[in-house]
Length: 236
Ligand code: ATP
Image (cartoon, rainbow, N blue to C red; front, top):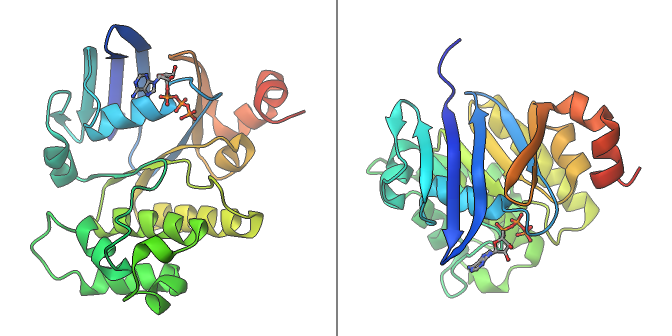
């Protein structure tokens, strides 16, 4: 078996004295979509922040593409190919849509034009609004911009936190279709979603997190069929 692209072992993280991740183990293989589901406050966002390097790790390890990046700063991880589209989007409202996209490729020295065109191809509305302040975009458009910005970094691994949050159903489908098309282009994705059914239906594998621990994991189709998941997360 080749080494997973991302391998997390025994990860613990805390806010001040309060530990919220209690020894998480998780792997993502190259070319997979892996979905992480779980109730509010389970620790999913904290785990994503640990992986991208904006949240300190207390103990345990994070290996990515052959590197131990547990203690590396976030920009070093971006340089290795980790892109994070955070919950709440965190776009720069005063900057234009195009400027926000360019920021996603800040660590690159090559020409960004082709990737900009690719993002505009995926989300044509962003091309129409390229010169306008990003703060004027609707919630769904801001979500597209956050994903587009992550694409601009040409990541090997994309961390998507709640890509469907606040979107109308038709836009949820559009964003999930983009996620699948990214996988088809060779990007590996780890996605956190409240919408467990949507998340698992496009994933290869899934993990369930409860109160800072992984309580269930497996093939996504098996998880969708699992009565425990159906009852707790799929409203069955
Ligand atoms: P949600 O979907 O609501 O974001 P989550 O599964 O992503 O939930 P986290 O946001 O990682 O969960 O939160 C895990 C725990 O850490 C929660 O108990 C939360 O209250 C706490 N927490 C999150 N951010 C902070 C912070 N900045 N300071 C203190 N506690 C925090």
